[in-house]
Length: 217
Image 1 (cartoon, rainbow, N blue to C red):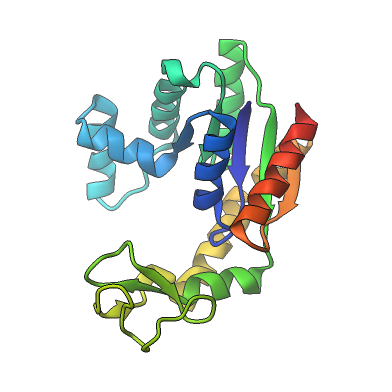
Image 2 (image 1 turned 90 degrees about the vertical axis):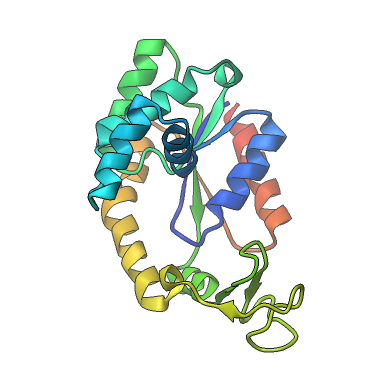
């Protein structure tokens, strides 16, 4: 299957993308991974993207699209792929359609993970990361440490990242509503959108997504 995954920050896109790609046996293609891979390999696209990032500017759509095109042309993506973080706006969605049409392939579904805004804020703003090992993650409400501010695993200090502050989260949500959310209507017009609730246990959400996608096959 060829799937685009969308949803607000905090809806669990990264977690679900990894799980769904594994279940469906297709590669998970995320914008962040594309940037990191191209920059670390010092490809021409990576050097170009880094020049914009180093200057504090957004990477232009055409660079992101070129990276996505290169990744989707790899042998492991012949049977399908799951796009996470791309397209990020309507112009990227239009460019993706043009690219896929040129290749003679079409999207099967756009999976929209839905979560109430206040729940999203609560999920992200409550996150606490260990300074010694960033893989150790806790949550002030859902998975609190035994001792406030101290990692259960290694004793490191737990802190809230600047990106996780409530003010920053609400700004990120506003960006999502103005830039990314319009692609849902764009794809609805093509009959591709499948909306599911992102609420509940991770396994429940994965099962819900797989059932919804099965109906689209």
